[in-house]
Length: 519
Image 1 (cartoon, helix red, strand yellow):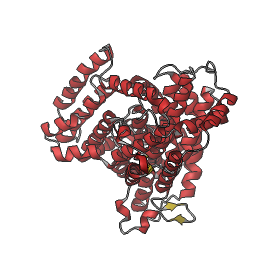
Image 2 (cartoon, helix red, strand yellow; image 1 turned 45 degrees about the vertical axis):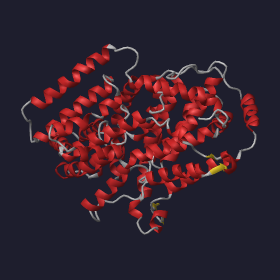
Image 3 (tube, one colour; image 1 turned 180 degrees about the vertical axis):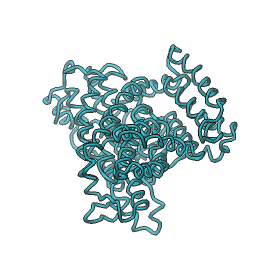
């Protein structure tokens, strides 16, 4: 980043974040007891699963895949080796164990969602380069002040609302630079002195988790919801259907209640001071805004790109509003199925490299100086998660797990719902929620007939819980994105996420039991 460009005051913190990521990726300064245990426990678990005689109807390939998943899960949780290094394990183990060739394994590291991540980060760097993140942050502080709990709630509410209409990934990518701008401002004022402080961690986690909760509130908010709708229309044609309005009427209140419970729990699990020392006063913030003056040409151009990107994400596909449908722009092209949110992200990011702010001086919206700051270790982490998910679905391991639910026929309904929610929550910690939902809904749906219940009583908790994986960076794109900011420690995400996973299971079970007569 050039020091003579707007936003250069953030340069020091950017370097700090990069150094923090480097320390994280290298395993930190000390090889802790947790890492030593993990380094030994991972291979032991791998050998145990690999060598035990086949159990149930699990195939040999599925059992070997489960062994790889166990090894990677232990090493990710304990950070026994660098996270990105663990993510690369499928490239070695899949061919070595006869599970998949190098080509089919490696393509997962170039998944379309990874390029959505890359494009979104480039756009975020563009906002930062021209100082828009600072302007956004000051506007937020002027409205709500710098009180930590109120600040956290404001970010969570905005993220939650946006993710109802935009993909969770895109929402997180839009909110991340704004959140980082607030943290930079507070740190400069002496209110936050180190990366990894309670406010840093709670704000980043709040953004990621709120995006997941907002996604469940509408049918278009997250892929598992659409998968459920498609499955219902295929498996129960004319008998079971759910409209946009009905889904929103049922799930939106639950999503909002969970959001406020999440806000309270974050404050308990990552204690925040009641008031930051030297809390920013609105008068000072207004003076800072006045000092920024009017938007520069570069700021206007970057803001326009940002807004257009959001609109392209929202209106890419048809929006089924129940009573009417808003046609998507992709449908106006000859090949609508070929477009994806990553197409928008990369297209708008590339546009920034060719849009001149000052043609005579050769100044463009983005330069590769910003591109060099991409968190490539998180890109590899993301790829490892996709490769693992590919392996699990490719061998039918997910279906085997689903079939183990057969014993639920003899259980009370509340335990059936809780068991499904628990299974989906922790399974999607290491698999794609989209792939898992696609594979398991056809397995879970038939459970309704012998139980004599409405199919939605087993399908709804499965679909909702697929979005409630909060423990690992690879569990959901929002988790990976905020972890890539460098402001969250792995042990914090695991600790907080574990509590939230169980909270999600309890709340989902209670919610489904409450609305069972409305389905």
